[in-house]
Image: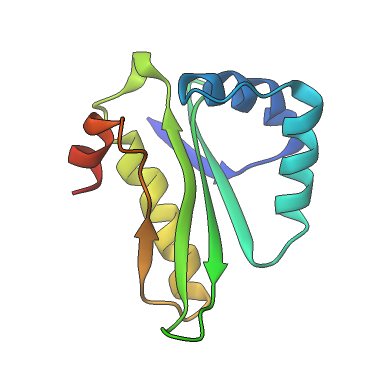
Length: 125
């Protein structure tokens, strides 16, 4: 069974490894600093998915306010380990962001997706 929890600095190595699956080379020091900054910023949230105590995915969301439109929460990043895809883990991670948004009275969730990741486009639809 998949467990979703808030990200912690203890997850740094796993998160950095998963980030490379998105095409981002992240070293441990940079990833740790980013996780710490996100956890200390009330307008950001991040969660990890665990399966048998192993981090198999992560998601990051952040509150966004624009002059021309109402507030929304944007998904800044989402990855599920390629060996664990199609198990609805990504859907559960998105639901954690959605619950965080609702807790902050935000009803709209947005995502941007790299044009080259066509499989991601299908997932988000």
